[in-house]
Length: 271
Length: 188
Image (cartoon, rainbow over all chains, first blue to last red; front, side, top):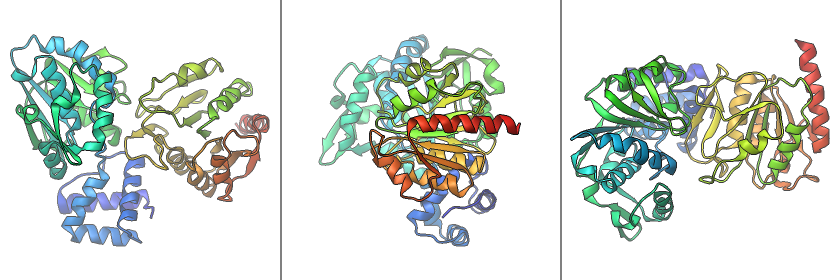
């Protein structure tokens, strides 16, 4: 069931009033499709039904958020990015006695564990603290648990190797039936917490902020807001890593950054 | 103009680009099903076949006349109301990411009757629902003739929706592009 843009605007307005989440600046094409998908999955027949159910059923709204925000992710996604991270960013991070990294929009955690693995192999993990945040407490719990389907491990192993992994990927998890449980040493220095990029403010200063394939779901206005938030949250000479379809090109903030890697969209704050 | 294809369509796209009418300025957006996590050389290959610039657009990049835009592997490519591109990493649609239908449907919503679509050879049904939407919104839809296509499945699935304006061989597509180009130039 397709809803119009006007109906979507009405819905996001209601959601903001009722639940405090503001989806009004999410990119249109994507959110309309996600809402459409949600109504199909829940066999809803009309916009009225969608509106009504969401306003009155908190559990349903909870599943709505899960559906509407895209949480699809994988370990070592875009392996070349991790190669680049190790080659161009880690050596600079090494020069700091202590490091803070922010994974903004960490979803179910696959990317966080990937970074943790790479930091471990580069000898950087111990003096690094990772803050992994997301809008959704359900996915945060999954991230914190670090349990992934065992059947995904084969692909993750391939990605790990292509990302320049130096050991055996199976060193980092234990397999039990159809689950793979990431070793707890990987999350020793990770703090998982709720944070909403739309509405929350800066909470720390970081040497590296990783926010990949999150901002594609935001419209231009919201992207600019978030980039401002990141700028404020970066230590001088701190790094910002975006997804490979994203860039600072269309942002006012680009003048405060230099390009560290054009292909992998890694930037450094130079003020 | 939007073009979608899968198995066997690279050769067709090469031929089309080689033979675009002169002065063809209509922006073209192409989704070809590609293997994920395989080194991405399609842009370089296609660049040899045309003087037009081929871009793999960034998120929020705006659509400009005279350019050819190519969807990258592993993301859905969409078009926004303000004629910019947007991306999604959501689940494959019709087993495909990028999905032809996703591009076609968002393009239909934005361009309505100012849109022409060509669906080429391929081995799955991705694109059929996109053709339907484009036609419903007043656009012009072309399916490659299944008899001459390397894989008939994809164009045939679109034809089965009853929403294709023409079923054309590759040579006929070129002739149609010429006509569309003339109509567009005369309309300006």
